[in-house]
Length: 375
Image 1 (tube, rainbow, N blue to C red):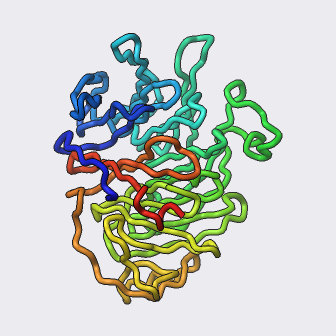
Image 2 (cartoon, rainbow, N blue to C red; image 1 turned 180 degrees about the horizontal axis):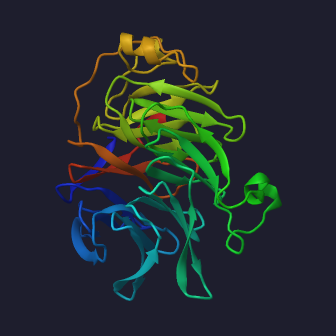
Image 3 (tube, rainbow, N blue to C red; image 1 turned 45 degrees about the vertical axis):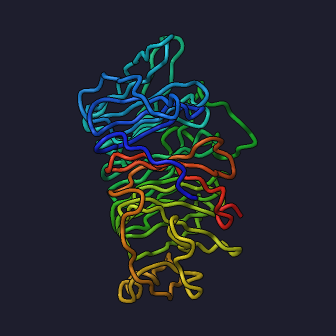
């Protein structure tokens, strides 16, 4: 069984995050509050309501080691929440933005977090011990439109972003006194704060949901044109390919292993993409189905013949020569899935993850009985 549990928490969920032991989940029900539920005798009970933001909360992340929650909101502010005794205490982080904050994520070492915004700006926030406050450093004048997602490289220095200007970018966030110089890392610790490492102009539409593979060697992100993009050797000479599918666009992705990716979005059902032994990515199937692609679509994905002839042979693309019929939308989720996050150990192989969407549901997925996804 792929679906492990389905929980109806609200009418709509904009984002969610789990505690380290997965006994609690924090979610935003499309307003300015964070609701924290705890699993008590096989039932989810609301135990905390975090109220500090003035407008809808657009991003949330829960650090695994330090047990801190960070939130970002359309009110242009961010809060770091610490659990002191039995109360969550907020600390305001002034982002110095003139537009909404749209997404947030802790760095792997949890000593920084990144905030993407509608001000075409990224905020890199870190704690200044001497002054006992959170400081925000800005990366400006690099994006031409809103920053829709951020993703930290495993080295804790490189940060990937997507934007509604159709581009994916990778920046250095090295901060002296926060990040240590490491000769083994080479160029990552030698680069300056805000330095643009690479700009990927592969999409003709808005881009979302950027993620790094566990090793940090591959980058994946999605476009609003029903494409997913994979980039290897991120740097001055990246190797890029795209996969086109005929169904509705994706909003977020997750690497479950170095060669397997789960994509979620407007089609309400997670999609599985995989790379073969030659490194060629293709659509495999929907997660609720055993097999969706025909044998002839080994290097392709789902899309109509006319659409495929127009887009499928792009200079960045892979040869796609199979035509599949569209599927019936809506399985466990009944509306757009806008968030997918791993559960448990975030190592080389992720066996469990959760999704949330505009239907107000959080679904936990287990890949233990999916041998083709655990190879």
